Image 1 (cartoon, rainbow, N blue to C red):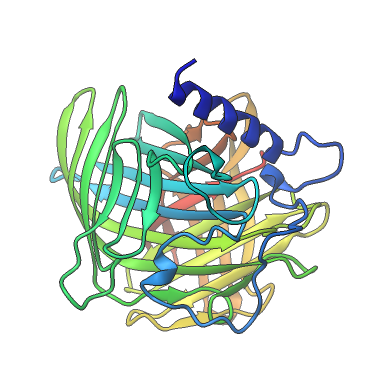
Image 2: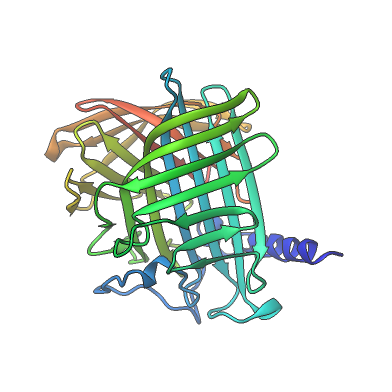
Length: 357
């Protein structure tokens, strides 16, 4: 059995345990399971950069998550994403096969007719995957997100990204036109009434240029992108079954991040309004109202693919539409994620992720 096969086998076992196969409630993907032995987020943290762009191995779960709304010269719309997840069997890091860290990469390109998906899995400690804060680099196999910022600039101010798979690939360059943004209260993002939380910041001000490699040929694209950085050890309550998460680029220049975590009741919502110059304004609990508008049959299940988003206190009232109803991520832990447009009180584009359906 090859080293890579062993790594994949170990990772699959880990992901199966994280997917909630235990008898006790664990929340979606096991993210509601106990955080015993791991560090947990506390209010009052001040982010440290560039250090916090790197990994936090004493926390159980972490991700580097970029989504891009893209357009070809003829106006055809696309979506692309590059994500690296870190999940720990135990807190801390070690060299070689003693490392308790599991890494998983997801890449996707979405068109109006197709949704291309690829997944990579690696054991930590052997160089196959990882993150370095400065000079910034995140990778798994030959997929890479690399910092190319000018001297003295934030390490995430400019990045190149690439991913290749059987039926698709891409090379993208992103450049930030605004500051990093803390989500929640100064980066402390509460996820439930019981107080589960994560550390969370974003870079929602990227412009993008690059190319997509599709079965029909290469396509030059430009657009906007959004990077999320988040880490925790128990980000969900045990009874939370999944989430509906939105990142929106408003035509006005403003941004909105909002999510609903589902449970047996009304769920838990949170949102941050981001001004055009990058000032985050956390909204009060319940200020964002999220309701499904249309469902579609996806991967054998009914999933809400169009949504109503309202913030009455701001006069914000929009309806979202997916580029492709079938943006299903058929990965180890499957979920829906794809580009959306929206219209109503304001127009724009963004991304929607839905888990637990």
